Image (cartoon, rainbow, N blue to C red; front, side, top):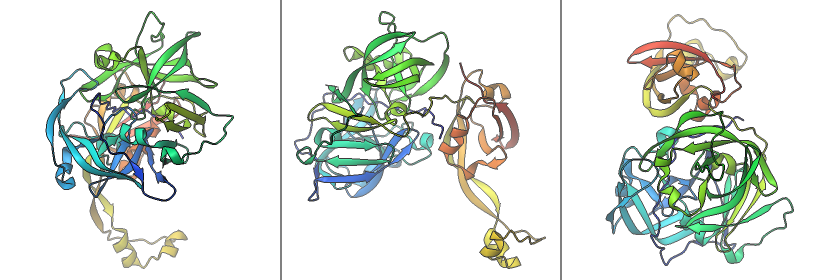
Length: 446
């Protein structure tokens, strides 16, 4: 299946906040629990219960403390208490954002529970991941789980396994590789190597499961870390402090010891957007979801090691969005549909009849108005096939290749834009109440 880059990335640089004295424990005799997750745009979405309310959280190794996006006043439902206002700073060129810091919260993931959890509620409505993912995401969680438990991430079978360190037993694995972890502000880094223009370069990378790109590198001319002549400028995502732009290209190879990914995607963010991220000594970038998902991982923060083994995604080629369109879920719109229930009653069609393709002629059709998801063009790459065809930001997608857009998830539609170059795409859109049709061919962006 084609994979693509999620264009929203939120990285929280909270740093030096301290830890609660309480730890996560597993409430069963095995001291271990397995939790299924959803993998959406290379991102792990896991169910988390806070103060008795089950929510969907992004699992992000790049965040220190749990974050709740309070655009729906979730904190009222969660009965969040003991709050104080603070300001957080992250990626992007904008200002810090205000958040409420709360303590004494009960947090559960499967059978793992912590009774005194600090978390942060952010009220900025722009920090809402749901429209960009097409899936409800209420917050982000990271270090508090990883520091207390051994965390296995099985990307291929889509589950987490959480185990108390004293109960974990390593299995012999000749095909695995193990890296030492280095921590800065509670975030994990590894030393590895990349190849650019046939030169092998040592790099220190943040392990960032909260980003869906493959690899971010910070330009460093003295080390030879810079884009090749084949690149394109693009919107890279939203940080906590604003939008992030930069160049996208490819590198010759990413070396995770004996495990080598060739012709990997890379983004070079503008230096002003990652000023705070570059404050970590010798950091050269981030290793994100489109690389991480190609392996199954065991994170052992107590012993400061991470073990990885390639999985079924390992050999999938790296690709880019060949349309230039970035979509977001934008609420719902009314769609006129044939009322299948009334139609069946009127002409006496049974489910078996329909399965046998019996044809009934009906002159008096009955319709119903249904609320269906609306998908909005929110970013449009300059000089892309979609822009040249005449599409605009804020166009609402009605159909793709003559099929109603509401029949697809946001991820399914976006996957169409990662198909082979030359594929014809036909889009019908609503522009200020007027239906317009555009066609273009997918093409490599660089």
